[in-house]
Amino acid sequence: YLYGYINGGREASITFYQLLFNLHPVSMDLPFGMFRLYLLTDIIAAFYPFVLSWATKEKIVSNSVTTKIIIVASLFVVLTSFSRYLIAVSFIGIFLYAYTRKSLLKLIIGLLPFLFILLYQFHDAIITFIELRLFSHANEVSDNIRAEQSHALINFFFQSPYFGFGIGAYDIDYIRSTVHPFSYEKQVLSFFPKVGLIGILMLLFGFLYVIYRFLQKKNIIGLLSTLLFLLAGWFNPYLYASNVILIYAFIFIMLSNDQLESIKKE
Image (cartoon, rainbow, N blue to C red; front, side):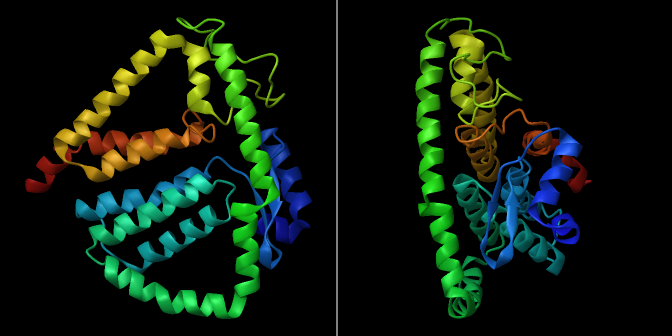
């Protein structure tokens, strides 16, 4: 945002992004004169409240003013993102954080005056924003693309159902991106033609093991984080983007926090 405002707006930001990553980002105009570039890092902001919930439960962080400011900042990033799913994940995480702090009622009561002021001062812009993010033609187009993509990937899968075509495979009849033809919004579904049924069973075994460990530890935060993160791959190609290594690290730390508990006792 800051680079765009200083150097000439959205087009300057897109040019900067292209030079830096050799990719052309999707962009969108927002209310209040803002604009948004789609970045895969949005998912990290959406899962930030889950990290805080776990860290609070484990007594690693305190409920500081800085923590609350960062939660608000992460919510702003997600609300102006392109993913309706991540918006839902972020709200789930914030309510989970409030529940962990035993302050869910305080959170709701505290938000009411803030929401009233927002609605009173900016009701037209907020209505426009909600329509844009949830009910606009752009969302309909996006949903139609995913439906077409699902049909193409299912047909592609049946061409080699047992072993697949390899992790870099893509359907030559349905190329979503000429830069990354192997990448699909329906990332979970795209795994089927890539690794086949045998590969899917291996991935499913690993997934079920992680779920079992969290159930065994009665770690609801870890269970929710893992399920919501994997489900995110049904809507956008998050699961093997380089930046989500932070989420994998978070899940691994929650699985391996027995040593952390031992250190705390000492």
